[in-house]
Amino acid sequence: MTRPVVGIIGNQYLINDQYPAHAGGTMNSEAVSGVSGCMPLLIPADPRFVSVAELIERCDGFLLTGGRPNVHPEEYGEAATEAHGAFDRARDAITLPLVRACVESGQPFLGICRGFQEVNVAMGGSLYPEIRDLPGRDNHRMPPDGTLEEKFALRHRVEFSENGVFHRLMGARTVMTNTLHGQGIKRAGARVVVDGHAPDGTPEATYIDGAPGFTLSVQWHPEWDAANDPVSRPLFEAFGEAVRAWADGRRAVPVLRSA
Image: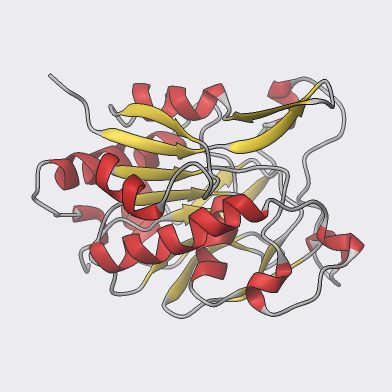
């Protein structure tokens, strides 16, 4: 039986500071295949190689992954500074219109970290360049040292809205998550509902109000140990259900129905 296809948005890298490559974390593919039950397909996010129309036609859903380059601030009307870090304009050119197309059509996507930020920018929102520099905010960045287990360890709580989409999905209002990001939502985009916050007020979970499909996004990295983590597993399972519904032509997204 053919599995539905999830396009995993790749990132650009230089191998040995010389050889250009598109790549995606293995744990993203593991989560999509093992938990969502879909076939992962790595997408070179560059308009020289793919178009949004082609991706929508070939894929049943999309995983908007994390990545070191940030969304360019020109995409939300601000000038670039050193604090904004590195950029990937080619990925911006694919993912931002892709998000808007999926919101309109109901094709499912799941946003993670940079993907969470892309969804906000695509809908007209803006970002802070560095959360830890804001008064009263914590350092949400990945620990610079340690094993992968230590870097992806659960580090703070996320509290969801009472009876909101994430509360119903998780079966709990408060969960523990990892945190490996520098930027965060400054102004929420049109129809972007912030459904979960970290203790310092940083937005951590969103969906698009009134969208006909699955539009959940999270600021943390649920792909880490997705098969075993009690927060990651229901998220990827619900995403897989939405992707299968799209592939089957049903378009039903139970997790987004009103309480």
